[in-house]
Length: 214
Ligand code: SF4
Image (cartoon, rainbow, N blue to C red; front, side, top):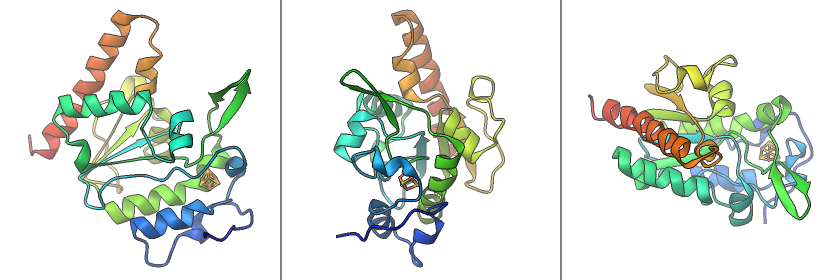
């Protein structure tokens, strides 16, 4: 049973001295570095191979992920799976994770509605993601949505304007950002949804092409 840790400013002191993905996942289960642990069912750590070539980073787990304890298993995750397949990226070769590891939500009737994590929560949680990047050392790092892009690339990064571009970064040889798949699901109509989905696949195809040396 993981030991409960007292509240602290960031998760940095919890990172194991010799981090591996299993050791990080186990340590993160007991994280209390921000208040989100009180709201979420459990810590939702990243998943995938420690040798993954591509790391995809979202904002935070959603309702389904919170209950399952796994990232990207709900409708947005299914969209991501299919888009990766269409782009020629094997989901089995990808590592998926989030900037924030607990589900932040607000009640609306009986439903739990997504709430955006704030800067304190993002700062507190970032050491987990930095440790995942350090262990996996992906060749391509893909930020899904503005929270991930602004946490990992630049505070002023605008996904709407800069999506699909590769930006210089110490984090990985190829670093880019696109929209979060949940934003495609929220499109106002079928035509927009189809268009947004095609743009999303096109952004992922650029990553596949760059990985293959194209
Ligand atoms: S959201 Fe991150 S920093 Fe906050 S308690 Fe959960 S794992 Fe720890």
